[in-house]
Amino acid sequence: MNRFLMSVETVKIKDFIFSTNKLKLIRGASHLLDYLNQVEIPAILEKYKIESEDIIYIGAGNAKFFVDSKEKADNIASDIKKLYKEEAPNSKILIAFKEVTFDGIESTGDEKLWDSIDKLADKIAIEKSKGFPIVNIELPFVKKCPLCEKNPVLVSTKNLEEDLLKLNITGDKKKYFYNNLDIDELKNQIEILTDRNGYICEECLKKLIYSMQIKAKKSGKDSTLSRVGFYKTLEENKIDIELKKSLDDYGDENSFIGLMYSDGDGLGDFLKNIKNIEQTEKEYLEFLKEFSKKLDETTKNSLLKALIKVSKNSEKLTGEFLIVGGDDVCAILNSKEVLKISKEFQEIFEKEMEKYTTAKGIDNRITSSCGVVIAKAKAPMYHLFDQALALQKNAKAKRYKNKILKTGYIDFQVINSEACIDLKSFREKIHLKKNPIMERPYSIGKESESKEFQTLLDLIIKLKSRDIDFPKNKLRSIYELKLDKTLEEFEKKDELVNILSKMEPRHIEFIDSIENVDYLNENEFNKLFSNIFDILEIYDFVDGGER
Image (cartoon, rainbow, N blue to C red; front, side, top):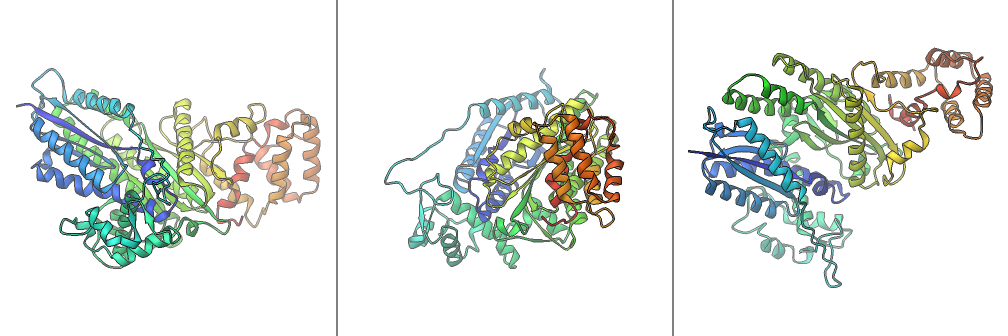
């Protein structure tokens, strides 16, 4: 009897998590999606008697499994869609399935299991390309939610209990995760978040409730916190996490926060090579199960180790971990630690995955490319994630451009504005081939085409050391001199000599040591200080320096 291979994929996660800048709702949205994926979907599969050997993978917003009939596949798809519609309004879920002849050992037809998986992925991609309908209610009598400013208000603190009953959040049919819901506290939270407006949409309400579940765990009450996501990894390792009340609380003395987004590299090549190795379909299926679990565990454990290594107090960590699973990491961190944590995470992840791929006899390395944004806490999180994603893609592109596939890359940007800037245009305007001021992205491991990120960090640490104590205003003078289009190169060189003449001998010696400055050649100034902007931009965010 033929079976059906099903795939469930949560898409547009960014749109759902970052629909508002309120930290509690961002945190709740992340926790909500983790809970549905890791607790509720397995419960649905158990309801339809899907055995563990038929489940390929559940995690990181995705699930793949086998079912024994089309009717059952339709029912499972219907239940999952209903679940997401009720518990995560406006989230986007794609479900597809196709008939396969794989019986658990081998396929009886011409199409092999790996081909079926590829075709199912194509089916999901086609559904994704169709887009999603958008309902935009712009009517004078429709009140919009003050938190997301897009959904109609369905709940008011004036009749909160009545509204909760209508939404089936309380009453006889309430679900497990609403058992400990404190109505008075919920009312108070809505009032605080909406500046005493008291109105909220269903989507924001659900996010707030799930955020309160995390708080419930912190106060010792029963909750879902320890059962899902990166919080489960923290709890299993007995690591306490300090959750802040708002994004501002994560800011430094100048209200800067750090956002990192990391994504894996080389997975497609690795899986392709595994597929090409002679093996039975059953062995390939077992490999997929093992690999999915290994990748997820490595990502979470690598981040945990990086946090502990960088944190001054490893018993109590600070951060918001919005996406941690599969090969993805998105986290809000301290602006003075985010660059170091990102680098450490990538190094640990690469080493662990190298051990795994080597053991499998495949030379393809699985690495990680990362984008880091340091910006004001007031900047919209949606835009910050967009910028981090753009930087991550830039880092990944550098990996393939250099054809050095054994290490990942990191790109970063400090943004002082509201984050609504075109990074590509900005960089093209100030960074020229004949007069470079940046060397981003940097490689994580050693390779010949790009500078290693650690060398940049070491340089800044040395600049700020007590022995060197290089004046930052002189760095800025050199940077401004590089950008001055009114001067010829020989004039810039003369001005550099003038700047150096006012420095201490140790500062001049330091510049000599890093640049090998040729004071006699007046036509090569533009070749010097090719990473001066990189140094200046993160100067205050390395080694605990004050801004």
